[in-house]
Figure (tube, rainbow, N blue to C red):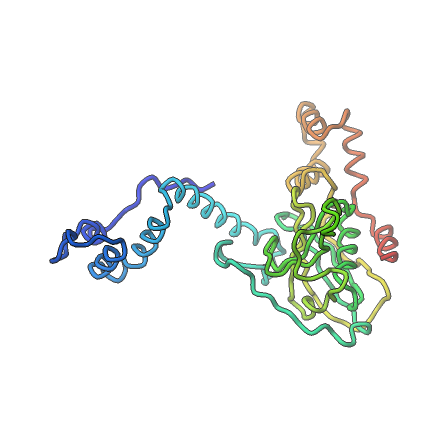
Length: 321
């Protein structure tokens, strides 16, 4: 996390404006914040006015220096996070989902279409890529009938990533942004039923081509609001109909996601374990398998091996969706 600045450099012009040194009228007859701000703005050069308006707005709304310091740390950390996210995508992928700081926009811009009228005669080629995983990235390329709805797309994603559909999920333009929230709504008569408190679109009633229709269109799929598995779903092509059921033809990274295992951070460590186990010391191996609750290294490695992708079995499972 970025270190908070301990000292803010303030120009002489800004200090003089606060102290009334450049004013012929002084501050003695000013008794409202609005008048103080107005007079100070008149005293400041143009390059200082934006900063003064920002800081005066924060102060007038009761934001303390401590609160702003906390916000500053979060803001800087988010900047570093988004700068690093681009590395999670392939080197030739020039259409990274978003750019800039996560605070740039409060709500996402939504690209919505009229669903394809001849969707039953078309196939969508989708790339489903896990975020925050790189070297190598983890993705699955699938072909699905273009007349699928988002419920069936959810089932496809679960199958091709190795997840088990035991947690809540949703589709957004960006993860957790409520501008677009495609999913299954909770039964209000039964608060213990699975589902979301709020949705904008019912997954079972919303065609995939309402939002994913042209090459380059993207949404983010969020699964398990604790482990936070997030996948970018991107349209790579729209082609003539090839099959009645989904098919996975290409993939990167043999290891599937592992349910209730600790999310992407545990995933990356597990993938490293499979690749470099022979390089670890006996102590390191013991630390690794005990951390995940296994009694021996063989038990741990067998568990990981069970979660390697098997394309033949995967496509057999996709035929049932």
